[in-house]
Image (cartoon, rainbow, N blue to C red):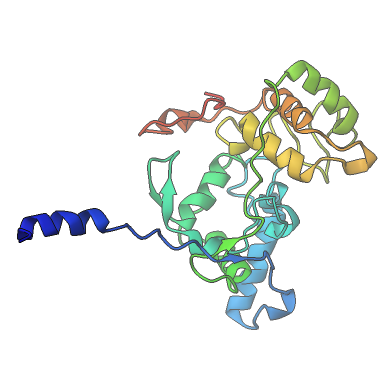
Length: 266
């Protein structure tokens, strides 16, 4: 006779925990502009697109440099492997390690205004915030909640060897200076990579690994230059991310629960 408790042990050992379902993968496909509705919602979406693509002009009270949202989120937030906004609406709220808490879409937008644009946070009820939210919602409207959008973010990149800013200086002269300028200050049409009108120390792009992934995925081979290797991308990123740029006074509050990346600038 099998004692009841022995049977329970056998049953418990036989239980296999079910794996969580894998997220549905969907292609990155931004809606056509013809789908922007008429009326107040459509007007908000269109204004949000303007703020996104020319932030200094359409959000001058909150912009602190020459960058726009689309300086990093290319093609108005629609380009794959360039941190697209398509599908992002359904990803919030989410845990923000740098802040050490769960954050909203508004928190994430204001993080970019404070860091990447070295500016001021948008008030929650401001027209600029409401319109940016409307624009991200519209870009994401065809993506199911919980789906994984192919091309989200920047593809992770590994450097074959430690990054060398001296080699990076040569890569910059060969592949980047023609557009961004020898002084890195950009032009009316090209964002600055360093200096007072560029992103500050608290921006994600100030980290060499983040910058390298973006450069390799989006800047390699532009302007007729030879495509960059992974090592080139790391070297040139080590060069330009360590050039002079604005400080971020609130950096002391970052990663309150630990986990600060090794390539953080502070």
